Image (cartoon, rainbow, N blue to C red; front, side):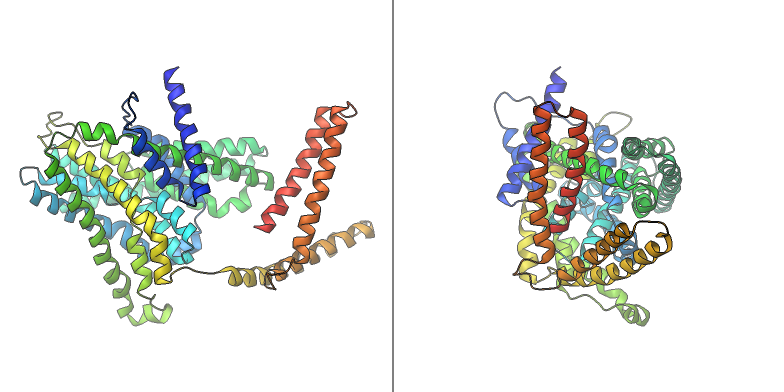
Amino acid sequence: MESIVDVVALVAISVVGAALARRLGFVAPLVLLVAGLGLSYVPGLPEVHVEPELVLIGILPPLLYVAALQTSVPAFRRALRPILMLAIGLVLVTAFVIGIVVHLLLPAVPFAACVALGAIVAPPDAVSATAIARRVGLPRRTVTILEGESLLNDATALVLVRLSVAALAGSAVGLGPIAGEVALKAGGGVVIGLAAAWGAAKLHRRIEDSLLDDAVSLLTPFVVVIVAEELRASSVVAVVITGLYLGHRFAYLLSATSRLQMEAVWRLTNFLLEGVVFLLVGLQLRSLVEHIGVARSTTIAVSAAVVGTLILLRFAWMYPATYSFYLFPRVRAREAPPPITVPTVIAWAGMRGVVTLAAAQTLPVPGENGVPDYPRNLFIFVAFAVIVVTLLLQGTTLPWVAVRLRVQANTTTEDALAEAGVQYQAGRAALEALEANADGAPPTVVDRLRALVDSRSNNAWERLGNQQQETPSAAYGRLRREMINAERHVFKIARNEGRIPEEVLTRAQRDLDLEESQLRRSDD
């Protein structure tokens, strides 16, 4: 019973924190992190300890899966070069540079343990980076790079953590075995991800019940992770590949009802998991501080050195990694180099989060399985310090940096123009389909359908017009919502008076709700 109460309390605090964040205009992970830090020092609250399997198996897969579902595969493919430079190159360099820095400060600690710490703090977080980037309004390519980096860097970091731990326990690990292990795990993850995506796509094609579609979608990331872990492949790569493939094809695999319902289910799941994980990060601070077992000066020095190295190294990597490829004429002919402000913003968007939290908990206990003595609690504290400092420092200042460097993208007009052009083509295709299948249909029905196509085309062009005045589509939406409220009120009165059963009210209200939700979506 106590565990159920704890879970309910965590979810409730996460919901309240997210609501407060929206009211104050902050990003929810930052508010929940601060809330957890404060609650960890409330007298009487029990210590919080998160098992790494809970994060790696229970929380990380659905977060990565939904992020992959929402990622544009064509945009991801176009930005693959900078994504791989960050997700693989920067993670490997960061792990070894941090390992060298920590080993210089703590020469008695085995170098393998220092590299393990470097791999733990190397990958930026998908949740915090993309949430803040979208809120700031960064250019789409920049957001795609941050999303792609956060989706793939976890696999590189987790594999390197495992190899470093194996070396710490006495297993000989050289450069060749490391490269082979990374390639084997990543390749296995790709194969498992594609196989899982193929199987899930087959199921979705056959399923006609939207509830079963939701159930299959919710189970998919967990099944993929379990299979990948059993086969010793990269579960992160497998989940990401599955999500990218299915997200790209959901328009053809699912019915309209399933897509609408699944979007709502995943939005709620993502909202709750994000809130709980960042709250847990803050709640563990007190127990970490109390069990470090190292002098405070050493703790501060190592934490400051790691955080400072992470920030500076990301800047040192971004500029040559961005512009070195433009030395090749073929690359310059294909695309223009970005202004220097773009890699600067990407360099500053290096917030750490859920993967660092989970990976830190996997550090082995000294004395077990041949692991030599090393300051495990200090390393876990440093990992948490990196999460807290980068989220609070970079997360809160990223909007200011983007505004100062003028990296924000106003794509409203561009999007409206593109939508209007495609909507015109779609309208032509719809009219051709109508003419080809209108034989025998009442003329009034055909006229209504033609008017509907014209209305949708006109709505798209209206977005390019004067935004200061109420457009015809906006007036339509406002008036239709008032009409829907009046219709809904009449049905409720009829139900209350016993003139219609509850089932009739439910059916009518569902139709009105769908229409109203579509009106609100058009307003957005």
